[in-house]
Each structure stands twice: as C-alpha cells, then as structure tokens.
Image (cartoon, rainbow, N blue to C red; front, side):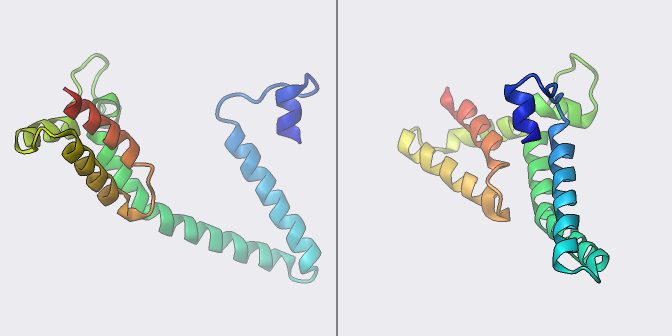
Length: 148
C-alpha cells in the first residue's frame, strides 16, 4: 500500500532508485515478527531466529551456484568486464565470450538452424545451475557474434 500510494498519489514522495529492496525486506521482516508473535506467543523470538536462519541458509545455497556462473558470463562481455576488472575509463575492455565465439565460428556450419540449436544448447548448459538469468547476456552476446 505504501509503495502504491507513493507511485500513484502525492501523499507519499516517490521512492528513490535502490530503496525498493530495503522497503520490501523491512516489510518482510516486520511480517515475520508479526506472524511469529501471533502463532507462537511464548517462543516468538526463537521462531523468528529459526525462520531467519533457514532463509539465509537457503539463499546462500541457491546463490552459491548462481554468482560464479553470472560472474564468468559478465567478465566475458565487453560491456561489463572493464568495471569488473577495474580498468580505467575509456580502456579497451576484453570480450572473452565474443572472442571465444569468433574462434569457434569457422567450425560452425553457416546454417541458421544449426546456429540456433547451438545457442539453445549453450544456454541450457549455462542454465544447469538452476537459474536462467546468466544465460541471457551470454546468448545475446553469442547472437551478436554469430549475426554477421
């Protein structure tokens, strides 16, 4: 309600960029405490701690596989590699994925259907960690490399 009032009325000022996540996280924490108070009046603090620990453990287990894959994908794209590698402004950023695709390109038959299935297979391999998100920039980079 707070976010909708801020978006569609002038009662609450707009939320600045980057402040939405703390608002949602704080609301979730307040909801967790309120529900624990209602459900377990005598041991509500222990219940909050248990649920919080379970949530943090789950997030580390899940993101533990996603972050390295996303890191390798982003370090391979020229748009992101300069910032990740700490290169100065205006320096030529390496595009490891683009270069790798260009190296393999002479060995790929120049048939659009085969290229599409090659991109599908690589996207599936990247998605084996359970998250399809890192494959999106990789697939776009590969499509750009094979487009010519």
